[in-house]
Length: 436
Image (cartoon, rainbow, N blue to C red):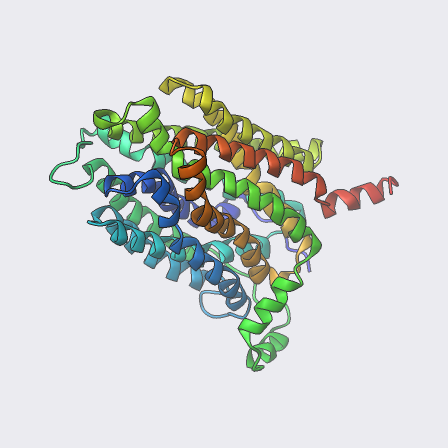
């Protein structure tokens, strides 16, 4: 059964929790490598220090999705998982900047990433659960706008605190600068409140056949066995998009791990300029998120003019160019130009694959299949964590800038793999027009 058309503000409320999720995640991505370096980690150590978090995501995503498919109660199907994930994430964000050792920081990163994964898969499914196929692209566009807003504010927050509120950006007594600590503490509150808004203001449709749903819950089926079965039998469209997702996120993780420390060391010269460089990198992340915000508004209309596949390919190529251009940049303001391409790429990555999947996947398996699809966010992080340290040490000679450049190459590979994707909606339109 297709869903009725929803108002803009209903869709906004459904997606608002993602503003908080991205606020917390944005702080992590912009500052985590710098926190590790502050605590004594070398560039080739950084990838392996991220490993616990994606390994947890690998285990959590599909099973949380499966359990949410089998859940119904006062808070609905997906919202109990938003709530649990938000509480744990907020605790991790609050205590992250208080870490006194590399292992302590790695523990809080593990807790944060694992908890975010509890929210992420059900949230993607939640939007698809409630929207008609006609509104699917628009719904994920609204979600992308909120993601961009969260990323803008969280990435720029240390810079804003230092330059507008005179919060110290200098490390005192071996502690992280106050700008970083205050940003994480603010982020913990924002994360929790935004998700709570969706939990208590959002609504969900009950299972279409409640009697069949209750019968299914009573059956003694193994969630583990069923989930592996769903993974092995994922729809072909997911397999096609998975390869794009894999290389796109591999490129993004290269950026997250090495862009801030590249700016601090290569552009700002390290030493006394290190903290200023990290703050400027956060501002760069905020600028690409701002670009993503505006592009997300335009993308649904553009996708009506040309195919979603073509738009997706163009956005990936823009991201590749943006990251690769950093090797030619020597001034901080030119970095903002490279972020233009990343912003365009990010909008495409946050909207188009999920809109394609939302059209193609069965609603009764939306949670587990969205969870499985999100594995192709965490698997690239695991691969980078395990093997990129070797590349950094023995191939790139610990040149952080080459790590960022490699991310652009991965995005270009992702853009070419989009040629293999068969967008169901596009195929249906061709048949109606008599093309095939």
